[in-house]
Image (cartoon, rainbow over all chains, first blue to last red; front, side, top):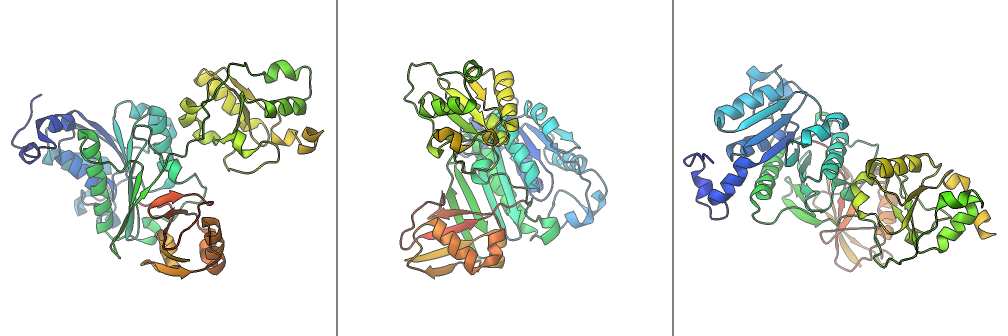
Length: 358
Length: 79
């Protein structure tokens, strides 16, 4: 590789990085989602560090109220597309790297295609919806992402989905209520700088393999009161039993012709070869399937857990009405080729605990 | 038992951002604490957040010990 030794001299002097680490940086492909408060410092430092291919996706244009914290832009940039201005500024700083721009939103529709071209995603978005899209796309594509978010004087940083580590959903389940963002409640301009630089740092550690990553850990910073905490997070993975037996599980389809559903469910409840899966979004109790025999995996997260599902058991998927579980079964059989899956038709509504006690 | 409660995010609108000290003999688990906090400070009952004890994320059944530091962590969305 044709390396600019003088440009990266101070990296090359560090034994932890050196030529090998710098080459890894030059070969890395990083997608930065959002070129705002967090995206600007992330982009500046990963570009300066020599990350060889950088993607920038953002649909916005620069506004005057951005300039208090979005330091890639100047007053002259107001009204121009953020990705265009960012590209110009970054290339003038480091013309040896490649920058690709996408003046659009990161959505469910373009996520998978974009991720094909990058190894690491940096979440610099400003809303929860986009964060869940990034999370789910990275889980599906099996790629890590460096998360950062801010609230007034506070910030959070973490590396998610790194080598089967926890994901954002292990930290916070999806919720309809969007917490207020800085456009509505204000933010100290320095704050996204601090948090974005922590993200850039994690990106560089991830690429070069040095130090300890914030994977399985959430860094919480309150800059007003100088409070730093590193909180351990576990992957909220359904417990999977490994004591599988040889016996072939009974099938819902074969039996449903002869016996009422309640009888089959009764049999399932006795059968250790049956694994119930509750795909309702909320982890609610029900009177029929005991918690210890049920994995709760919301339909929206199911794709991320396909590899964790027991292969030697009959998976009986249920929800309240049988409709979401039907979608889950279709996805598992058609997209992932699973054959050990059955839908509980009619869902919990179709069963009553009375029937089962007979 | 004596605990220190450390709120983050919008929870600092209700609870002091530098933390509060709480002494209570009937609070044995996170569930008890949640009950106590949401009753004493109804404003936080509407908010979504998780608990971390001594810098480790825990579920509602987690048993508390004397001297625990309990952080209240809401999701942030800004960027």
